Image 1 (cartoon, helix red, strand yellow):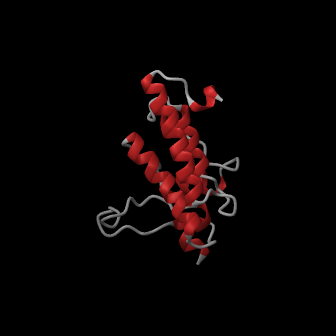
Image 2 (tube, rainbow, N blue to C red):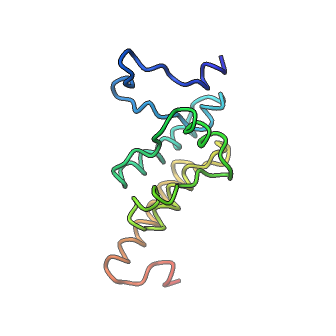
Image 3 (cartoon, one colour):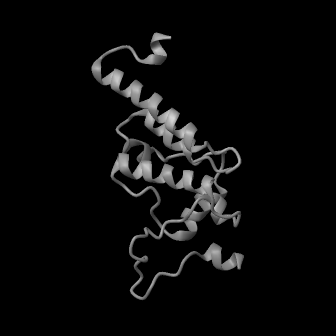
Length: 140
């Protein structure tokens, strides 16, 4: 039922999530009962990218608060908090990349090909900045 989904998964005895899961909410489309699919996989990739880049889990806190932030937050994309953005080393390119992938509406969420192209662009800008060379955007 919708109420059971909104209430979230029930952890096993002892309160810990199932092994291999974070217990974190799924993509906004899954929380809203629109089903899983490639768009929800892209959302998951955005969460994973944040976690790999920052070393921190993106969603912490109680399930109801996190679910509300994911599914019912304002704006077309999930916006990182200042604290979450800071864990990405002040790299605005990385913040914008993660937020772009975390587009709430699965119909307009980027495709895997779009994500790959954007990652390559961000990578080129970051590598150029690290080398002290002009960035591709600045050279144009």
